[in-house]
Amino acid sequence: MSAEHVDQPRAEARRAQILCAAADCFRSHGFHGASISQISKAAGMSAGHIYHYFENKEAIIAAIVARDLEHLLTLTAEMRSACNVKEAMLECVTTGVEDNLEPHHAGLNLEIVAEASRNPRVAKIVHDADIACRESLRLTVRHMRRASGHEDDDATIAGMVEVLAAMFEGLMCRTIRNPEIDKATVMRLFQRAVRDLLEQPS
Image 1 (spheres, rainbow, N blue to C red):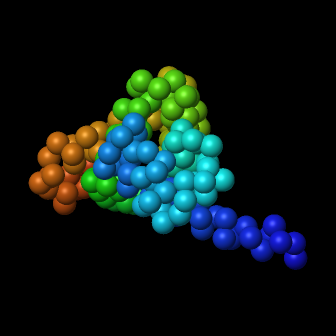
Image 2 (image 1 turned 45 degrees about the vertical axis):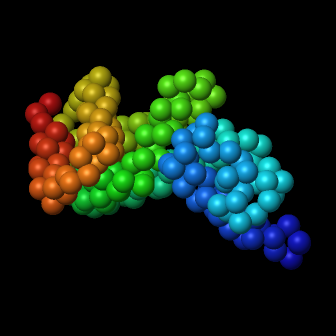
């Protein structure tokens, strides 16, 4: 076995360590307030070691976004392979609501979106990931709708995807604005709203 293959798990562990430290720094200090020096201190390694894995802070954000995208693409692929796609989607609502109402998760994602609003390089990272996420979710919704006997045009499927995205992303704003949010009630009503959306007439 080559040294490269031996070192690969260690390199992946170091990358994950850096991403975790960077996420904490971005949440606490914002993208511009978080320096490579702060990230290196939080990660317990030198700044030079950070640069060995990531060219700059934008590259770190790209890796964080790519990691989250990979999780979402895997999740939607699993939904499409389920015997009952609609019920699989509804089961995933619980996890999605819990994740988006988690303050640390919400804070990091909102910080990345805020940076995308003023930084063209981060905007491209976010936009490209959103396109991939929407396409996978579009395939999933269309598959589910056809299995339920519905034939929808592209605009309708795209609209449903946008509404789903807006609902889940809106939770991140709500948990920051209202830390005392009643999660159990929101979860119950959210599941009902998603079911109503997925079951609407053609």
